[in-house]
Length: 255
Image (cartoon, rainbow, N blue to C red; front, top):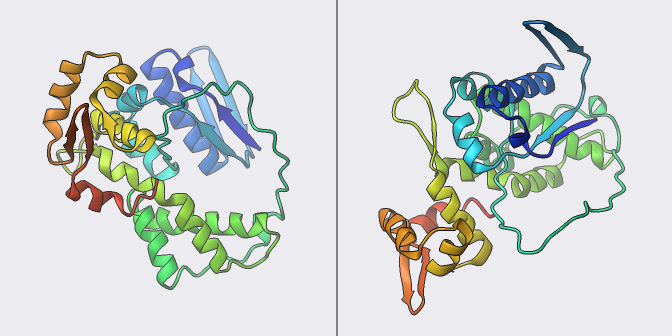
């Protein structure tokens, strides 16, 4: 099964959001969770499924800064940064009929050797520790094979995952921390600007001001902080594009 949280913002306090995300990460990874709070006790055991949680950047920023992020969430989750700004209303979900294939327990564990495996590991390094890289990539490869009703992983699974997981690299562009063991920060301005570029290509100052409901002068001041990453390529209207340095960093992302 799949547990879907359409918008974590509906969980109304920072404490509740962080607790919810920590619990979901533990539930999916360990297949159980136990909570004993004042007046409330519950246990979930034998959960074998996935969870999808949508979170907006302004809320992700507070979650990333929490100690629970590094301690409980990072290694047990996949962060996929959807950077395309919607242009049209989409009131209805897509109509899909899925064939779930065979159970993943029937797929042989891949050995994770060779150039394709190394490429997958380099993507995983952005989000997970070394042991979790092997664990998560093995599970994802097995899932790909099982959807195709195969009992062995082959090169097509590696190639598919390299394509699907490439956007995970975005995290290396938009998160940072100042010490080895301390809280992490989401660079929300860089994430917002990157969203503009992914949506429009080279984007104008007017588009940036409109989408974030700011004055053009304020947006110009913000963009002036990031001249190493973004340069003005036209003045009529004022238009921004990535610098050569940023383009080099974006090559492996393939958004």
